[in-house]
Image (tube, rainbow, N blue to C red; front, side, top):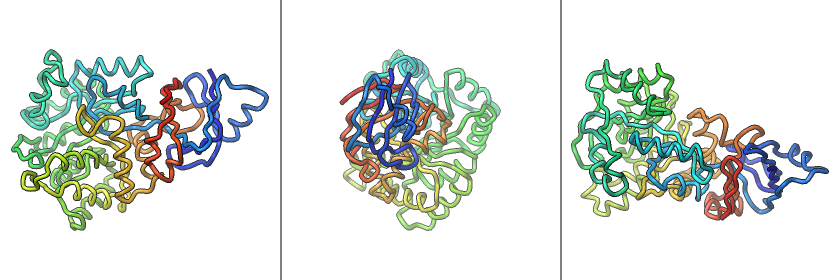
Length: 386
C-alpha cells in the first residue's frame, strides 16, 4: 500500500527540510519533497495523511535501555522505533528479539546481550532484587565472567552466539551506588575491547566517574554509556576529559533522565556518594557538547524509571535545557545513533530507507515538547494512530 503524507514540516534525521510531502510504499520511504509531489500527480495514493501543522520525523532511537517484557511495546507507543539494549540475559533476549523481528506493534531491538563485568561486579548486585518481579526466576542464568585476559576471545565468541550486536563492559567500583564492588582491571578491559574489535563489534563502556572514563578510554572503547557525574561544573578535569573523548573519536550516550531519576530517589544529599551528580552530569554534557563530541540520546530505561518511550521525550527536553538546540536534540535521537551503531537502513527520511516514522502536532524542530502530541507512528510502514 502506498501512503502520501502531505504538507508536513519534515525533519530528516539531521536537519529540517521545511514543509514537503513524503511517500511510503511496501515498508519503505519511496519519495521525498518534489519527487513525492511529482509522484502524486495524476496518480492517487492508497492513503493520504494530512501533515499540515505537524512535524514528520524519523522514528526515535533510545541509545541506552534495558528491555523487559512489555518494554518494546511501550517504547513504540511514544515513537521510539528502535531500542539499543545495554544488558539482557540470554533467554529473555531471544524472546524479545523474536518479537522485534516478527511484530510491527513493538520497537525494533539491538542488544549487547550479556554484559562484561568482574565476578560479583555491577550490575550483578541488582539481579536478586529483579528476580521474581520483572525477571522470571527460570530465565535468570549465571553471568559469564572473564577470569583471565586470555579468555576474552572466548567470551566475545559466546556473546556473538547469543546474538549480541555490540559489547558492553562495566568499569564501576560501586562508588556511585554507595557500595564496594569488584572492578574489571585495565588488562581485562583492554583484552575484552581488543577481542570485540577483532570480531567486528563496537565496545560501549559503563563508566560514571572521571577515573572510570579514563580507564575506558585507555582500553580503547568506542562509546560511553553515560556522561560522568562526579566532577562539578567548571572543573578542569571535565575539560581535559572531554578533549580526550573528542580526540579519541568516542561517542557518549547522555542518560540525563537516568541521573534525574536517581537524584529524585536520593532527596537526602548525605545518602548519595555524589549528591550533585545530576548537576554534575549536566555540566559534563555541556563540556562534551562544546568540545564537539557526538552525543546520543539515551535514557537507561527500565521497567521503573526512566520509563521506556516517554523517558526519551524527557531526555530530549533535558538536552535542550542543557544547551542543545531542538534540531540537535532530535538528531541525537535519530541520525546520530543510527550512524554510530551502523543502522544504515533507518532514522533518516530519504528514499530507500525504512518507513519508521512519527508524526506530531506542532513544530518539533523548534520545541521538542511537541513529541508529547504524537498523532501517528509507522513501524516498517505499518501505521499506529494515537
